[in-house]
Structures are given as structure tokens and as C-alpha cells.
Length: 543
Image (cartoon, rainbow, N blue to C red; front, side):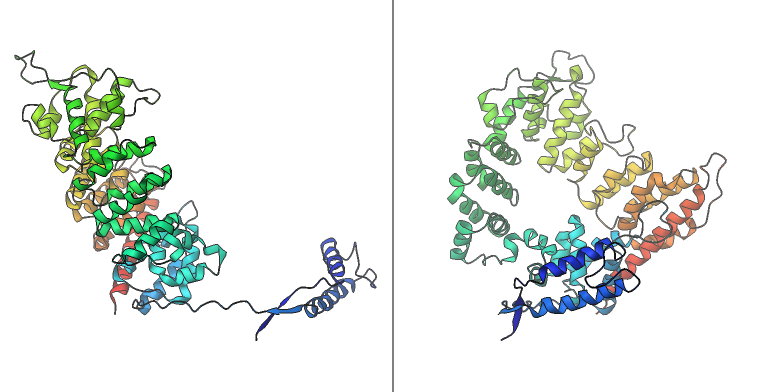
């Protein structure tokens, strides 16, 4: 039997500590036993340490061998092509980042290419080279944003390694149940047992997986233990119903409106308001209609006007349906209640209420008494919640409008959310029009919601705007965020169009000193990065 060793309480322990103390103080201040000061003292100290090391090791008592780990599981996925494996090794070796600050030069930031590489490898179903798994886990340890893609790519062997190295335990926490496999979704007994006995993370993973495949079965499973769950757990479980949310969920959510937890009640109300045909949506529609109307008292006016009469109280019925009674600091109570009612009302309410007008016509109507901002902001939230593209278009307005986003988009964050309800092509076209009119100064957040790689019109709009900024003599680091996005999101096929921007431009009289050289470097880095991304894709496609 293989043996390891265990320490014994040998009398030499004190001698070892004395040698350590001598090493710390230095042999000019303290000499080893039996040795005087002088040039031989350091040698004597090392000799004594060597002898003491042998003595300590020899004084160990044999112990029973630890249990050997089970072999690593097999990964059935096909291996990476050789060139792609080499590329991954380079990306992982550079994970500390080449650009710690200051001038970046023309070198691509490989750290920012690793997430794209992992997404592409996962899409193709490749398995990683085993020898790169430690470096991959180290990279994921240092970047939480990298973990989902890295662990998906690393596969089952990552969990095997994580059980052997405490530095990689995040992989066990990030994987529901620490890597324990979920029962097959046809295994009713296994599902019930895990639901009743599993850890919280395992139960969340089970409910989410079941919800994606059989929404009704997931809801019924949740109902079996709902009354005995902790409030914070009920909230997390209820959030899983967002997947495949439908009319059949309404009875369960209506019951949750009476929950003991305010957060659970609010989430249930939010989910019900996302179902335009729900009873809660109908109740909210009645309340909201009582607050908004067309002013019929001025028939001679060429343009009808929307009038607003906000609620004067928040009654118990409103609170039960998710209206928060206490307004945040700086907000009036009536406007706070009004916004919540309009946000939760089905958007189909308003064409009926406001004379059969389309969303675009409704948004164009003036609103009395400075209520326009509050009303339009609530419609924005409703359009996002109900995923209503027609209302989103109306509230966004034309991208070339002077107000840059329409009257309902009260902030860039609001516009980004509205854009999220549109399909990828329409989203890219709108943002391209916005950039063509308003430049890049406000476009960064909008670019973040566009599909990657950017559609050609959007890519051209970004490059044209960067070129205009370069010709104006601005420093490129004013646009470093957009340039970084372009490196990751611009279609690699656009690299050829950028060759004309690589030369150092003539600087206008009012240009920032040296800006032309910085711009040339920035465009060179962009072109190099795009070509590197193209090479990465080609390597992954090579069989």
C-alpha cells in the first residue's frame, strides 16, 4: 500500500526554529550553534539546516494513504483544431492585458478578444485542450464576466479540477449544485426528490430547466412547496416564471399578490401587468383611463390635448395590485402613483381611450399642465415591459429628430431599453441614423444593445463619425469607449475600408497637438484587431 507521512512531536522542533531565527536575524548578529562569527557562518547555517531537514523528514510516522481522486470525466465534444488551440494559448497567456494604461499603441487588446473567442468556440461545440484548463480557470477566476462562457467551454473537467484546487472553487458555486447533474426532465421521481431535498442552487437550476421545457409542470412543482418557502427563495423562484410567461400563469400569480413579502407581491404584479389579458392589467387599465383623457372642452382647437388627473390616494386595492404607496425622496405622491398605473396598464388601452389614434399619433399629442414627461416616461416603461415594438417606435421617434430620441425617451438608458424591443436589423438602422445626426458623444450606451457583429449601415456610421472626429483634431481617447466597442463589434470584413485612415492626417490649425499620430495608432489597432478576429473565426472553422 502506498504510504504518506505524518509529523511527530520530535525534540528537534526547537532546533529548527532556532535556525529560522538565525536566518532572519543574519549570521553577523547571531551564529549557528558551535560556529563563531565570520565568513564561514552562513555556510554553517545552511549545513545545519540541511541536516535538520533530513532529521525532520526521517522523524515522520507512516500514515494510511489518502483516497485517490476519481479519474477526470470524459469530454465527448470534438477537440479544437490545432490552430485554434494555439490561439487560445496565446489569449490566455496575455490575460493580464497588454494595455495597463496610457498610450495603447497599435497592439490589439487580447484580453477583450477572449470572450468573443469563447463564444465562437462554444457555438461550434468544441472541447478545450486539457493542458489549457488551468489557465482558463485562472482567467475565469479573475473575471466574473468571463465565467459563464469559460465554464461552458471548460466542460465537466473544470468541475473535477475545481474540487482539487481551492482557487477554482468558484466553478462549483457557479454551477448549480456544484456540478451535480440534474435529473432527466422525464424522471418525475428524481425531479420531486431534488426539489424537496436539493440545495437552493440545485432547485433554482431544476425549476429553470423545467420551465423552459414544460412551463405548466414547473409552475405546479413550485406550487407544491410555495407556502413553506422562505420569502427570499419565493422571490427567486417567482422570477423564474418570466421564462415562457403566459395566461396559464395568471391564477398562481394572482394568489402571489396576497403574499406576506412586499417584494414577492411587487414581482407578481409586474409579471401580471406583462400579460395584457390578465385581470390585474384590466384593473390597472380602468384606473389609468380615469386619469387620462382627451380635452373635449376646447373643440375649436386644431390639435386635441391630453389631460391628466393623477389619483388623489393609493387605496388598498392599488397596493394589492403592486402600486408602491410611498414615493421616493423628491417625487410627488400623485405623480408617483400615476406613473405606476400607466406603466402597468395594457398599451392597447390608449388607442381605444384616445379616439382610435395610433401610438405615433398619441405620442405626438400635447399634454396639459407639464404632465407630458411623466406620461411618456410611463409609456416607455410599459412598452419595454410588454415588449411592444410599435409603441417603442413611436416613443423613440425619428433618430434624426432634434431632440435625439423622441419625447418619451427621457434618458439614454430609456432609449436603449426601447431599442431592445426591436429586431436586430431595425435596432442597428435606428442607431446608425442617430449617430449620423448626433455623432458619437451620446451613442455609446445605444451601441451596447446592438447585435454583434454590427450590421453594415451601423458599422459605416461609426467609422464615418470617428473619421469626422479625427478630421476635427480631437484627441482619440475622447472616443476610446466607442473605439473599444468597434474593435469587438465591427464586422471584420470592414477592415479593408479602413486602410485609408491609417496614415497620420494633416492637423488643422486648432487641432490638439499630436492628435493625428494618436488617431493613426488607434485606427491601426482597430484594423489589426479586425483582421485578428477574422483569423480567429477561420481557425475555428478549420476541420
